[in-house]
Image (tube, rainbow, N blue to C red; front, side, top):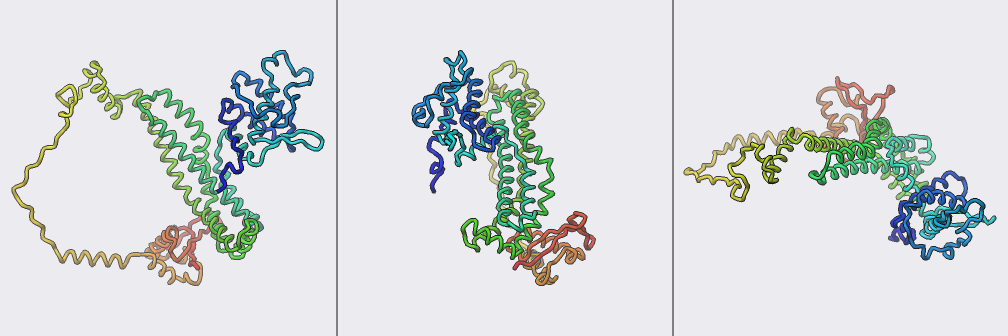
Length: 485
């Protein structure tokens, strides 16, 4: 493995660890905004002017730093950049703080550390560009600056657009790659949301005794509500795109996995892009499609875990506030008062407390409860008589139940008897009475949870958009069973 610093310069992160790290980060975001607004490269003079305005505004919070090894002779920057020959720029207070000189110093360090690069064009115009390895870090800083917003809806919509649009027929390999990336981003966002809630919960319970009501309220309604509830959790719970598009995505994934012509053509294009064999490319496409389906099925357990953690945090926060404001209204509060009275050394509190737990005023090791030993009985236990006939009858009934048990082989054989080896079996074909309904339910469970089951289940949609049908007096899912292979 080559490692990260085989690409990044060794001092790449040095501007973000010193005393002026906040200013370097702000200047990088400022440059990135200008870079996005301009269609061509940024002229160096425009960057210097923007840096000058920022540094002049924050001059009081700038820390002193050495500029050794980063002077004009190292970066190719002329000495004339330290002074501005334009009339009206050098104000009387420039002797104390030269904003242009400071801007040049900050820009030089960003260039020398590998964030930016300086280029002179054919017409002698000097422009400042972003280095290829620095672009992802610029995007991350910009996102942090504007506030992290997790758009769960956009991930699901992008997955649906990639797999269910017209592009999947012409460029299926790119569509699957894009859908796979969006699926991973959706799952990662849900995991981060779950872990962020756990982080707040752990912080809340880190030091309960030192917590104050104001701190708990600030953490709950200012930090937690602003960073988790309003920005992520609320959008996750109010969005219906996950449930709306997921069934259609499942259906499309199943059709693509069964389309031999599409798989072969997409594998040929994928192998040409990735420089791999066609067989390996097809396996990779099939693996990504299966991961998309499995990851979307894992969304519901993740949402349940997020709901549970949010409820635990809210309950814990309310209970702590109640224990601090009205400690004598809860059992935990009463026990806390008891412990303080017994070990706190407050005579007034001890007199008010009528616990009646013991007759002594202090606890010692002699106060521990010792279980009284039980005297040995004067009789010997006798073994109970064993009913051999009852045991044999219970064993026979057990094996009879096992023979009648609807295992995978029995359910698979039942689907074969219904014609599953020759055609696709629908719900209406399978369910006629109570016995067939029970076997249908077992077929659904095995097909959805057991990879070694002989049949795959496929979802259908009616013309009115519903996903259930009526058969044998039961409302059942509109699905089909297709034998593998």
